[in-house]
Image 1 (cartoon, helix red, strand yellow):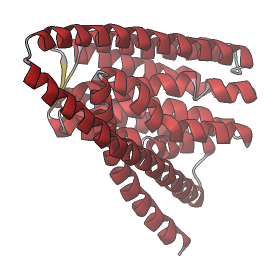
Image 2 (cartoon, helix red, strand yellow):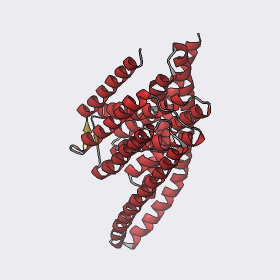
Image 3 (cartoon, helix red, strand yellow):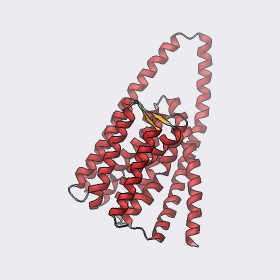
Image 4 (tube, rainbow, N blue to C red):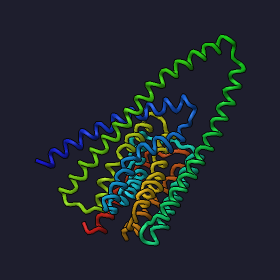
Length: 336
């Protein structure tokens, strides 16, 4: 009887997450467009951090409660799933995800670099507060890079707008002012709906994780496996919905940026903050198998997306196949 109730909660929470993510993404794009923020910047900052909060919260809660195996498992498992699973599904369903070479190079290499930083600190055993400070500093530096990129983008947009305005008549300028004032009134609604969508994401994900954890407990699944698969996939539902929704709607840069930004945030902040609270122990299989797989799929994504500046349906199927092979191999190595 208990497992039936948990499955019902799982289904209801999934519906909440899907609807909330749709509300969040639509209004985020409207606000970003009004402010002149590029899709790729939106993806790697607001959308990425917003959709990564379930993983971050799970990692922090796990560390505080002393169950750090779950925390590390959630982060590494989520990152592998985000690329091989989510982008694989999105490219397969959408048919194609077009990519921006500069954005992929910058954010892809940053994601790859953070994975290598994680492995470097894992080689020394526990991830300590020293490693945590380095990770947080690297993330701040990454945000600074994004701000610089956004500044250049805004300057280019402003220059284009000035050239366009010089050609406008007085009558058109008055109409533009009216239009801008209308946009401002619409943006109040956009902000409210975006906040509502975000709250729905948080509540829906909390229910999703709780029900998924309880079902895993009933099934007798170990903590590390629970983190790598049950919680990793469960907490990545927002990324899946946002990325898939963005890809289907043709917002390709936002789709890819959400995944890359989320993976960077997951490692540097999702592990960095818990490591400030207490040392995070490293499971041997995480170091020798899970983390290298994470590096491999990240590098593969960069190579596939730069080939023709797109991810095709075939690329999506390749990524999905890799995730299935990884999951089966990991379960076998764990003795299942």
